[in-house]
Length: 337
Image 1 (cartoon, helix red, strand yellow):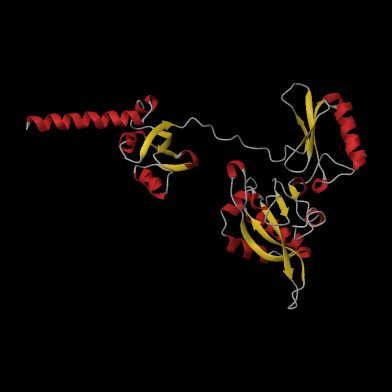
Image 2 (tube, one colour):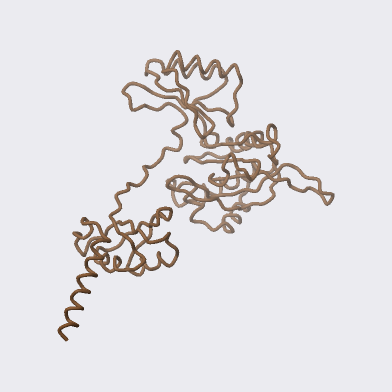
């Protein structure tokens, strides 16, 4: 009996030591009533079983870290000891990773102050990423004369002229306008991206740049947006324009127009893509839309969003994330143009 008591005592000490090794000292000091954000490292990349196991301990999953065999959870400090005792758990530490800051999705267009006092940058709009040689030379001169000589490219197919003193802003703006470009844009045109398209790429099924311009010309006078939106047109499944992360994404397709197999430029249309903190793969909502019908279809989606969003602060991404694709499709088809 005495030997059994000693054995049990040793086992308890051993179990406590194992749990202590699996937790950082800061977590061990937490009061049982506290809620903590923790990173749970597992012995192998976590599967659904591991996530469900943490949920049984009251954990709420909020970030996938499976590439480093981990997941981030919120749970009560009172559950930390029992969670650490799970065989599949390798270590638990407090989550000190700060959330990404909110992004200004239109910071690549217009005049913005730099961190350096008294200096500004101008985001110049290129219509679907196109400009002429004479415009390139003129922009280089503007950057040299009014700014610090740098021209910075953006992923939105626009660019920034940086290091402009406040006294030179009006001059820079006037010179940009004089060469047929602009430093301001609607929400539609500011987030409009198109790949090279069939005019310059043999893989493309559609004239993406031409059709992107068609969408902008059609929608701008008909839809007034008060929130940023990204519309991406890509010509093939290589997806150079990343249609799958656009609020609205269009991927080129050959659309049959008769039983003889004749086809015209067209698109499959996706909604709800996102990037950064709102990372999401878009979902297909319309299939085989002829290119000449695409501007009207985008108009329908934008008007559906404006008419049904929860509040003016709700973004297109948030709206589509809260709406089933079938429901969204029915709402869009009912829009009166």
